[in-house]
Length: 143
Image 1 (cartoon, rainbow, N blue to C red):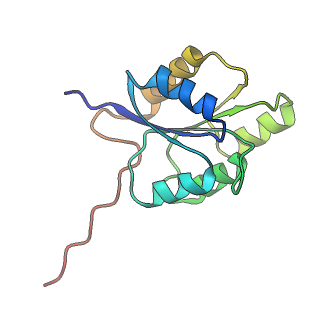
Image 2 (cartoon, rainbow, N blue to C red; image 1 turned 30 degrees about the horizontal axis):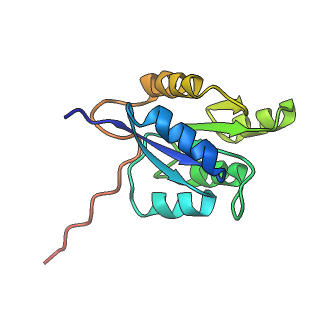
C-alpha cells in the first residue's frame, strides 16, 4: 500500500470540512479539525502532517495566529500552509503570506483547485520517504 500524504484541514465550517474531506480523501490522508487550538493540540501530540489548510476566521485561535504559532515552532515551521478565506482584500492576503502562508485562496473555492495546489506545493516541499513533519523519536533510556 502506498503511503499517502497527510493533510490537516482546520476549518470551523462543517460543510467546507466535508467538501474538502470528500475531495481529498482518495488521494490524501485527511484530518479535519474545528479550530486552531484543536490543530495545535493535534500537532503537538506528534501527529505527522505534510500540509495544513486553514481558515482565518475561527473561534479560540484565528488562522493568522495559527500560522504565526506554526512558524515559531522549530518542529513545525517547514510545514506548508494554504489559507482558505472569505477575506478578499490585498492587505489580509499579504499579511498571511508574510507571516508564512504558502498560498491564499478565496472562498468560495473550487475543491479541485485546492487539490491541485496541494499537489503543486508538495511536489516542491516533500520527499516521498516521510512527512514534512514527523513526530520526534522517543529518547532512549540511559538504563
